[in-house]
Length: 571
Image (cartoon, rainbow, N blue to C red; front, side, top):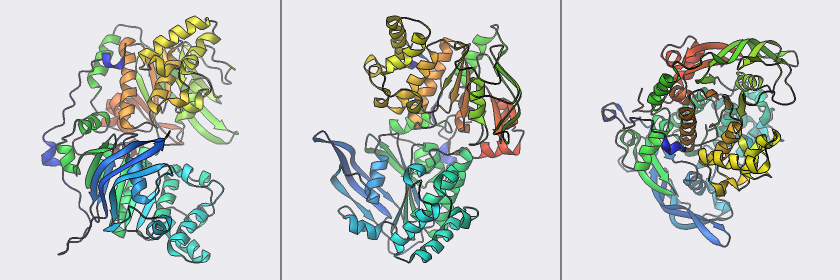
């Protein structure tokens, strides 16, 4: 059975009434008798990458504008060409990139053929660039103050002492508390949201007029995402910035931008005012993006969940996982979990949610038997977990863990089919039988025989996650613990993984899933019940629909309010 065999009976057409409710966001562009040039103008841009003696096109005749004083969102799945366009606009193309056709203008100035010296005069003073990955963009051996001061010196050509003073002001501008102390901190000492603000501060070092933000919130909790996006909007208004926001999330784009440009396979397939694109999308690909974004279609799996509930009635019920009065501390001091009670019923998807640092992953590892705990009890399929975990999983058929990062969790030197077959081989199954069963399961989760023969590093992110799920399923466990299984995936691939999970549930309605996520829109879409953790304590719990309709804590209300409110989202 494949994911295409499952008919979820979904009504995903977008409501015509959206056109009467969606309104354009105001911009801060001042009216003028003389029309100002766009902040960014991309005209018939084509870019390819040199590989193996040939040039592979990545962006194909893309054209769009970012009006002065506004925010334009560039939307598309991974590989669509978003970052390549952002790099071309910012003068940061890779060495093997080839500019094939077209041009780019910034505030009317042609920057298509600028050399590095020309870009030094533009980057920082005219254009600021916010990269996607803070930890990958910041030197771990350099302080925050060193990073921002260096950006200031390059953009303004001022002495080091003056650069340090401006760096502190910039940290204050982006609302980093205790900015003077944070200047001396190293990147690993700051949270993800603080690191993103540091990157924004660096991008503002030369008082630019144009800001390019490349997926600035892709790895952040929903509440931190909201604060960062609020900050960008505040800066746009206060500093008269023009913003190009790169994102794969159409709901976020619709909520936060004046205009939307949709990319598919390097081509612009749709563009226009955000409200117009949401109300009347013309490209099939845009419609698919709407279907794939949980915030836009919160009821996507409602029919499938109801059907599964009906099938489960009359079968064995009770708890697949029971956690009672659980507490856990590290080094005997730092309390991570305190007096936690969680019940995961057989056949349900139970979501465990909360911001980074709330204790979600620690609780998941305790339930999986990988981490010790101090007090309380944990039962899986009625069997108590010891407080100190055993060297190996005592009952692998009861529960398996699907890790957040398959590439880090699986041996990169082994072929995919062998990775999936390995648990069977450990259990004594012959090599031939193990490989046969692994091949069958890989086909079930949508991995071809050709892909199964590759190394895990040769697969896409979505394929790797499917392999991780297959490996967890090879011993036919009754419960899966999925730790942020879609957090690193774009919305289209995420939707494919969720479709797969529902296909597996349709085949086995008793399959239980503990789903750990910080994405409240996804949790609302797929979960039957949920537990909300805040700093290691349970602050809300119950059927998911009830928690979302009537949250019991201010913290849960804050999480729910941070979900993007794109025009046209269906309740």
